[in-house]
Length: 615
Image 1 (spheres, one colour):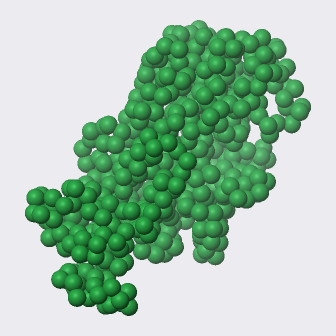
Image 2 (tube, helix red, strand yellow):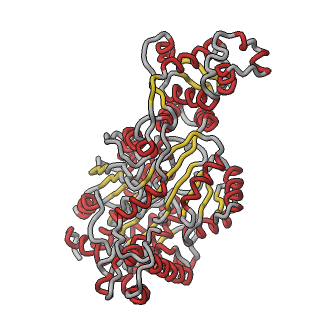
Image 3 (cartoon, one colour):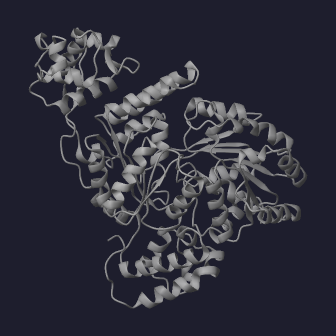
């Protein structure tokens, strides 16, 4: 094969089994084959890894891939080896014999891709070995880790520019799924000698259904969400180790197969639980943010947040772990004032510089605004990344709709209560004043004699909590996290209180949203033509896949992803040549697995249809 794009297209089909590039891939592959340095910003699930894997396959020489997680390296190496590509990893989890095989492959020149952790790459012996071997391309995954503005800053990434020079690599590629303008500028400065060719794809993940709910009873809300996802793989994020353990136990008792994951667990237990999640179907991992970066399981059908994420970029990356196969997936995030107070406290008590804290405040404010937004969630989210879009029709706000109303009077009542109590009190005290609830604290401070006492009796306590959140999101009031969560008025709030400006509020939520499950089924039917599909055949194909995966001790999707099995069930190929027309079946996988899966299809080919694969 040559460096030509024609050679890349040929390998795309014969090696990977894909008929065409995904949006944005071809331009990056062409730039790499042309010898250019590249910064690629592409959403999770858009196929970033193929942008360096394909050039590595079609041209001579070694590509070194910098990856921050052993699990990610192991997963990608397994997938590449399964399609006949010479790939390996160097990391601390390797047995000595495995490292010897890697070194032998490097000396013989047969290795195409070598995955290395940044800590391993910066070691003098690794640098010396790679300088001697020769590296054609240095591909840096999760490149936002190099930036102090990124949400996953890792100091060892700062050494990669120096290492590139020492191994005498002339071409660099940096890839990330989440990088706003400050982060992109930092990546360019720290990883490239000269400005690279930059490709920024749309941040939209149209297959993800976005939903958020004010937190009422988190356990009950999570359980209701999971009820529509029984038997599916998913991730639930919690803000603390304790909540992770408690929620995993609670959901396990409710009949779900759950495993916990957090940094306080022994490494062996973490690895075992991650392997269960990665290798088996229908497992729900309940985790802190210690779980996730680099997780490449394509059939995660949902991501839920039992607690509010750290900021809008963390939210985007975490929900991005769902639906990497392009099929519909659901997300749901719970939020409340306690979450907001915790996240703000974490920012203020952190050891970051004031400049970084200012950025983190802005990022968190953007997430709060997304929670309380009265308009399309996808519009609000994409606007943060600088994208303009029309209402998506596929989020909870578009589907269920929210009515907005002129809430200026309500906002003024709330802010008056804040001012008349000396800007010294938190949410619950203020809500009691507004609803006329004369608690012991209200009477002790004499707040039952205020003009604002009881002026909000027409609304319940949850409505006033929502109003406080919304005017907070609108920038009218500020939360002083140091002084026990007391509210104060901003300059903009003072203007509205004087009658200068209107405030639109949500009627949270005005109409019942369409069932996420029914929406998902409709979207999945549109995504893949399942006419003639056979539910029994799909079950049989999945059973064969699981048997092979267990025998080989690897994730089921490494054999074939769900999309491949869905197409096999729908199209029912009669020959191995016809199987090459199925997405994800290249020559290596056809040779290895084709006969076994074709036999299952042929046994069902003349049987009556038992239902659809989406049921």
